[in-house]
Every structure is written in C-alpha cells, then in structure tokens.
Amino acid sequence: MGQIMKAAFVAGDLAALLSPDTGAWSSQAGQSVSLVGTPAALQPTEAIRAKWSSRVIGAVDRVEVKALHDGQHLYFRLEWADATENRDHGDNSIFPDGAAIALPIDPSDPPTLISMGVPGSGINIWYWRANENDRGRHLVAEGYGTSRTLDQERVKVRGAWRNGRWRVVIARSLQVTSAHTVAQLEAGQSARFGIVVWEGGRAERAGLKSFSGDWIDLELQRGG
Image (cartoon, rainbow, N blue to C red; front, side, top):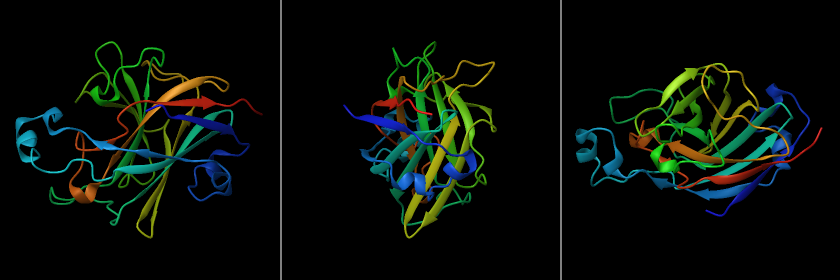
C-alpha cells in the first residue's frame, strides 16, 4: 500500500487513552485506509463459499485510523461509517460488529495479510467485538481458519457507536510475557499492521470481512 503511519508518544493513562473521544486523539493525524472483502473462494466451507459466491463480502470499504503510544501501550483508533449498531447475535442474518488489528509476528518477513499467516509464520490479532462488553481478545493465527484466542486480558478495547459511525480503540502493551510467540514492540522502532472490520448487519463474521489488503508500515516515535 505504501502507507506509513506514525504512532506519536503521548503522556497519559490507559483508562483515558482508551476512550475514543479523549482529547489526545484530536491532535493526532489520521489516515484513511481502503478495505477490500475477503474473496468467497477463501471461505472455510463449501456451503459458505456457495452461499456468498454472488454476494458482496466487505461492506465496510474505508476506515480512518490513528495510532499513538504512551511508552507502555500501543493504541489504535479506528473510525468507520456503519448505519446500524449491531451488538447481539441474531438469526444468522445479523451478527455483532467487530474490528481487529493484525500484526505479523516477524515483521521482517511477514506472510501476506490475506492468508492470515502460514505455518511457521504467524500473525498476532488484537480483536474487538461489539457484544463482548469492551473486553478484547488476544489471538494468533498461522493460516486461514486457524485463529485461536490466547486470552481476554491483554488486549484492551473501547467501542462507541454514534450518529452512524463506530469509533473503536484497540490497545495492548508493547511487550508481553506469553507462552506463545506474539508480536513484541518497542518505542523508536518500526512495525507493520493490518486492519480487519466485520459489518454484522450484513451477516459478516469469521472469514466474511473487510481487510486492508496489505500491511501498513508503522513508526513508533520516541518520547517520554
């Protein structure tokens, strides 16, 4: 994509910076990122592939993203248009809205984002879903359909829907201790990330999603 984002250092506490409307975000430059739908041919079962072969996957085609860090945590703020606020499971026609930040575990040799990693070269996913009461998920994946949740403590999230728009903050500590290999980050260094969005009002869930197509370069500026 050729995009490079900067995550500025901002002094603040976790609770304040998790708020999508806190003043710290207003001074940060954002980027508009285009999203594409995951092709029907890559869906995990024949039934889903057949059902969605002639339907549009990827209802959300653009998201504004901002990033900052406080020396301890990296925060992403995502904002996108969505006419409906979907927080509950429905009848297989409506699902909760969701969003995620994906990071290659090895940023020097990342797999393609569309593949969701490959065996031996995984991705780390920081996931928010509208029905989980602002409790994030920390996941890893090594290929399409292999995502698994490691815990629901490390990833911190807040989401607010208002006037037809979602504003969601997703954050995690730069460095974490884990029995599993996950992305480790450091101020003053570069990273890569991707964006995923699910529009639950269009029955999107699991592999039915919009994504940023390629990795976006991120520079974590020094500070503090």
